[in-house]
Structure formats: structure tokens, C-alpha cells
Length: 460
Image (cartoon, rainbow, N blue to C red):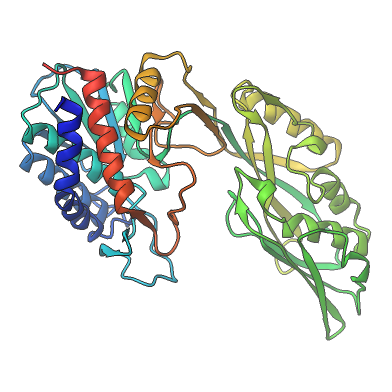
């Protein structure tokens, strides 16, 4: 039996140990809390970090806690920066509602493991640690040192990683199981802006959308108009239903569409842009009409705001007008937030310049709220080649590189890529109720991580 066969056989027969480790992590509700001295992201993320470092120490790794921002665990004790780093995060999003099982416990049923963090990112972190435990159990010694890096703020801006990078150098080869397989090597740039216009007095309020990074599924307007007719819009916006209620000389118009992530807006039906189009036509408001012309219903490529572009590596730009708010009880100024995901061949400066020019021509004020440049690692890199070889070895499937519109934990690093933990075609309810990972996938992840360590670091 060769080395890989021994590793895979051990993982299959001892998987319950990995699941026990995952249970220890899931039971800590490591949602970001109020910062305090010694706990920069609240008590629970710090507790999760402490638990993981204790588990790593129990496994014989050399651990450090860097001010409860980040923890590290090295295979060998050395002051040199290892060649390989594996980056995981231990913080999770809020549990939300709709769970059929306790969110902060690990429930196994029908071959699946349920709990907040099961796929993002505690399950992958437990699989990484178990892969190392297997190497130690089988007396397999990597030829080079490697480092596990555990963060605690990925879900809320990755200030943990910024803190770490200000004090430590990251390994040259770095991957994170904070995405999907085979390998994510291209992540589009992200830009978020706010458009501001004054609307006419007929518009008493406009609101819609909850998150900037999501296609809004609901929007509503209250107009100082009696019995406004919306029948002309009943079939105008495919996927969105427009309706009206009349009371006290006013009309309330609602738009109901379909939500989607901002990185894939074509999968949604934007209630906000449909409502703006309808209200601008009913009220004859020139400023709102100009905004509607910039963001016509159904358009997601930025053509009408002058930013449509694409490249072979990462595909086309996508954009969504996602959140609006306006009330005449305040100042009658409409704020409309836009999310843009731009290809790796473009810079934020180019996209912002085109947006600013278009907005100015329409008399609309524009402010940039968030800017993040794109991230790209060449498919020819030694790290990617090795990871794809490992993926093919373990799964028997073809390995290839993937470009995404979202961002992973390595987005701000020089050469990091996302490697796992979701397999193509899987649905694990990440960030939703009943988040889970299948037992089979967790085991397969552990095999992939063990093989990747052996391939990149070599074996003595």
C-alpha cells in the first residue's frame, strides 16, 4: 500500500475523530460581537480561536495566538516563514431563522452534518487539522514546514488578516478552503457607490433592498397621488409583480421580484429598478427618470452607465442597483446604492471615472463607498498546478481554474487561491438556515488537504 492509500484508508476509518473536532468548534457561536480589550471582534470569535489552537496543540503542532486576531499552527518549530500556508477562518455569520436543528450544535442525519460553520469555514478547518493528525498518526514527515493560519473576522471585513500582514509575512504559497473546487484563481474587483438625487414632492417615500450585495426582491413607494394606475406595468417587467393600494388620497405601489447574489444578478428579478421605472413614469420626475435610464430593468452588464466590459479570464462586468431609501419626512433626497463586479483586466479607477461622468451628465451626485481591486493568480503558477493535480488524484475529475464575481479570504493577498471546500454542484446552504456539509464531502476534503500538503511540501 503506497503513502496516499495509507492516508486515505486511515481517514475513512477514523472520520469520527474529525467530526468530534468539528462539533467542538460549531458549539461556539463565534459571531462578531462588541470589541473589548483582548477581544477585538468580541468574546466568541476569540473563544473559537482559543479552542482551535488548543486542538492544534493537542495534535503536536506549534501554536501562537496573535492578540486574538489570528492564530497560527506550524508543523515544525522554526522562526522561518514556511513555504506553504493554509488559511481558514473561525468566525461565522449570525444564525438567522428557519433552522430545523440547533444552529450551534452539530447534528448528523441522512449523511449530512448540520450546524453554523459546517461549510463556512469550520468544517474545512476541521478537515485541515485532521489531515495533519493523519500524517502524524502514520509517521509521515513532510520535508518542509507549513503553517495553518486561523482568522476571526473574515465575515466582517478581514481586519484580522490585515492585522496579521502588518506583523507577519505570509507564506509564498497560500490557499484557503473558503470557496469551491477545483481552484478559484480569479476574483473580480468590487466597487460600491451611492447615487443621490432630489425627487419631486409627489414621491412621499421610496424604499427597497436590504443588502448592497444582493438583487432586491421587494421595493415600495408611497405617492401623493389619488388612485395612481399601475395596470400598464402588469406585464412590463418579467419576473416582477407591480401592485397598488389606495387610501387617504395616496397610492402605495409595491414591486415583488426575486433575490439573488450581486455576483450573479442575472439570476434575480430586480424589484428596485422595476419600481423606479414605474414611479418615474407615473410622476414624470426628470431626475428619477434619468436614474431609471441609467439602470433599466433587466440590464445587469452596466451598458447604460457606460461601464460594460469583459475579458477572457474573468468574464463580463456585472452590476446591480440594490438598495434605495427616500422620505419626505427627512429631506426628499433619494439614495440609491450600486454594487459593481468588474473584470480583472480593469481597475476601479477606470470604472469609477466612467460612472462619475455618466452620473454628472444626468445631474446625479455620486460617492464611492467601497473599493476593492481584482485578484488574479496565473494558471501557470506552481501552486495551482500542484493543487489541480491533487484534485484530479483524489476525485478522479478534471481539474480547472474558476473565476468568480465574489471574494474569498485570499482576495487581498499577493498569490493566494481558493481551493475548496465546496465541490461542483453542491448546495450546502452557506449563510442560510440548516447550513451543512455531507459526511462524504468532509472526508474527501481531508484527503485532498493531506495530499496537497504532501505534494507541495514533499515527504522525507
